[in-house]
Image (cartoon, rainbow, N blue to C red; front, side, top):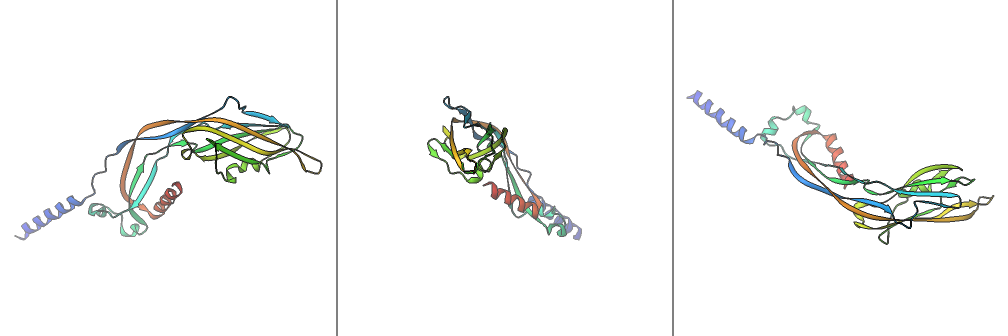
Length: 246
């Protein structure tokens, strides 16, 4: 009788455990991801290279492409009985958290914002300094809000006489502006001459116009989900990266 009871008890225990073990990994879900990729070309009336007062400046837009940037979402959760049975030793778990991880496919334009290379050919007999210049970007007739950091390379730039350099200026995120339109890049009050005392005697203005149009890029991708124990430091780092990427 006792042996029969033990056999029945073991069968019940195995049944309970087998009903609570970790479910098989979820099959990856195929989905279509997409983004709009810009093409930027100069308008016919715009010369990419413009020379004024001995200072030649060339503006070249970035080349854009669609790139995978999958989002990794980690959510703390409770393990089921089967997952708990497979847990690391208690001492090891002291620095770990049980999580569900989702790898969500995304397609993003690269670069993800307006970006222009500014080539400066200083043909002057003096050092060129961008300090004091004003940079403006218009999209579809609207002035775009940009920070000084977006054009700091230009206004902080220094180019010795008869030398060249290439700098960058940046505009708003691609997904924050219309799908098509005209982009205007303006450099105002660019100093090209000073007197012997260093006082500005000549300034120049430069302007470029570009046609801006986006095309839809698509591809198939899989969303993956997995569950398990991760180090708390890894969990914190992933959560911080998610916050910064929003």
